[in-house]
Structures are given as C-alpha cells and as structure tokens.
Image 1 (spheres, one colour):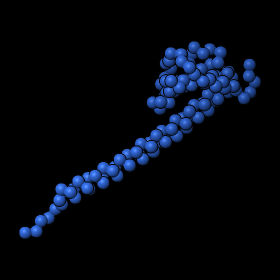
Image 2 (cartoon, rainbow, N blue to C red; image 1 turned 90 degrees about the horizontal axis):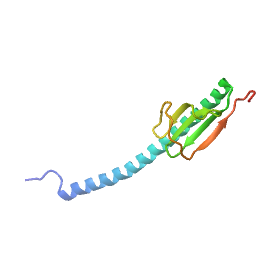
Image 3 (cartoon, rainbow, N blue to C red; image 1 turned 180 degrees about the vertical axis):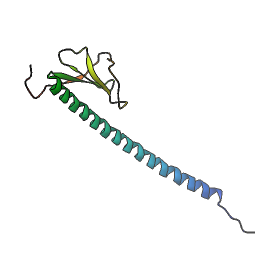
Image 4 (tube, helix red, strand yellow; image 1 turned 45 degrees about the vertical axis):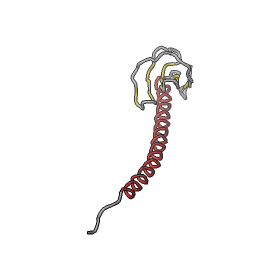
Length: 119
C-alpha cells in the first residue's frame, strides 16, 4: 500500500518557512506604511501652510500657524488675536479637528504675512 501525503517533519518545515517569510514581509509592510504615512502628513502640512498664506492675503492680516508636537496638532489663528483659532488640523489622526482649542503646551510658531501691504 502506497502512502500519500506529507510527514509531520515536512509539514513543520513548511509552516516554519512560511512563518519566517511572513515575519519579514510584515516588517517590510509596516515600514512601507510608516513611510507612506509620513509622506501624507508632510503633504497635508504643506497644504495647510499654503492655505494660511492664502488666508493672510485674502484677509490682509498677519496669520500665525502654531504647531503643537505633543498633541500632533496645528492651528491657524490671527496673529493679533491668538485666542480665536481660524482652523485646526490634527496631523496625528490625519483629519481636520474643527475649531477646538487645545490646552497650551510647548509649540513652534510660524508667522505668515500677506504679500501686499502689511500693517
């Protein structure tokens, strides 16, 4: 009588090789996903800075862009009235967060002026 099928050793070897292959593919996939996320965030932040510049030109006012790295948020506000945010962007969650004002933390600020006559 002929036996058909695989022995236990063969099955374990195939499963082991499959596991190792998936482990390397998984690391590669996570790395690629992180690179894509970083590229998307960079593109979105550049768009927000362009929007702040356009807003400064349209309103003929100085606009301040505030980055809050602790919360992964960025907000656009009037330079002369920082208590009234015009836009807020959550680049950690990659989506506009509305007009909520987060608690004050350490931050970086960019001041955008219009290209015409500034006050």
